[in-house]
Image (cartoon, rainbow, N blue to C red):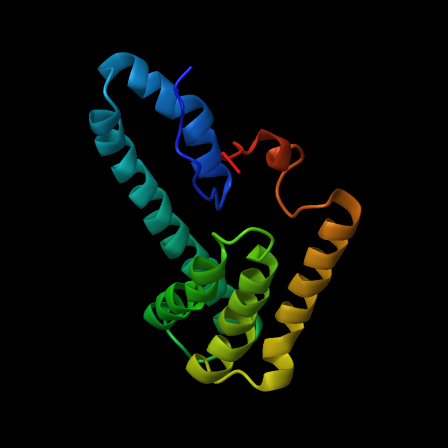
Length: 158
């Protein structure tokens, strides 16, 4: 089995790549550098698709369901800028919740209030629904990820 560096797995795509795709590609190349060169574009593709699809969903919700007057490029800017706290805090053990709460507030409430000119009350409705979902998920399952994701996460040397 190939030893994979202990990284922060932000979503299931990274985790499944580390558990299944990386060892498969490594078995073909037999070299860590070439394997990383193949896997890195796949990670970038995942990040780009997440950005574009997430921004499209946010745009549909805030433009058509909540009556905002922004455009798709505003949603891309909000989605990209709002991920900054998760990137800053996400790699620290037990602090991902801080990054998620801050990211959610920036993306959902603050971003769409300013960029889409949605009133604060209407901008906070999806934020409150998301926050309730997060707390219910953490309370009932211990995570917002799919069942068993935490148990599958590689452990570091610490």
